[in-house]
Length: 244
Image (cartoon, rainbow, N blue to C red; front, top):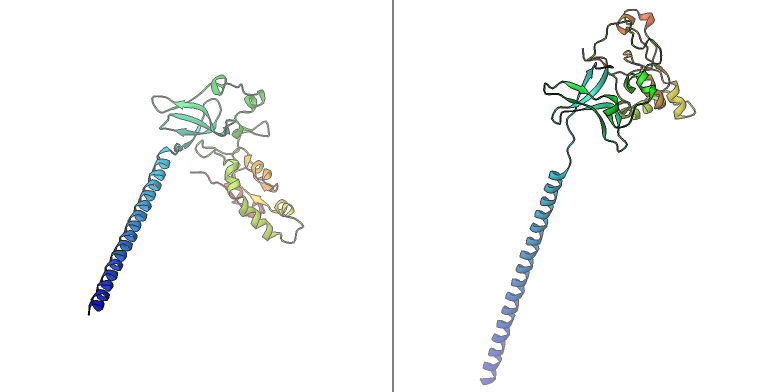
């Protein structure tokens, strides 16, 4: 009998120790889980805070409004009405920022800086004689047109606009002239038509991108379209139509 009681007591002690160990292990696991969840939440908050801080410190570009002005020379400019600044649509500074060429007066009208105040660098005689880059002409009668022009319509697309569709033009040329020896040769054979001449920069931009065959002449396209025999032969018509 005494031996049996000793054995039973030993078993009960062993069971109590096992329950304590199990409870301790369970408590440890719960504590580790809580710690891990806290770390995750803290990390998430840090991420959110980091993202929010980045959004707040990220510089925002001003909203620019395009407009044609006729001060000295007719030109297309970009206007920041919030900052009351006027930028050139074509020229940029050495760091890549847009070049400010004027400002808005109290009435919201564009006031263009004088040349000597423009950027601290005098313009070359060639630029002075030929006007701003986006109004460059190749013939002496550059300011004369055989049709009526509207300043709001008389705007040219920059080179960047043609670069945006360059891959489409290259793909079409490759498919159209798949039997040619090279991609460059296919682009040379592709004939493009832009009926709106403006100041003739269309052909220059497309030629610089590898498409030299461009029909873009100083003529009234609406009159040309009335006569089917005068309609230019082309593979693609590509243009930025006037607002009106």
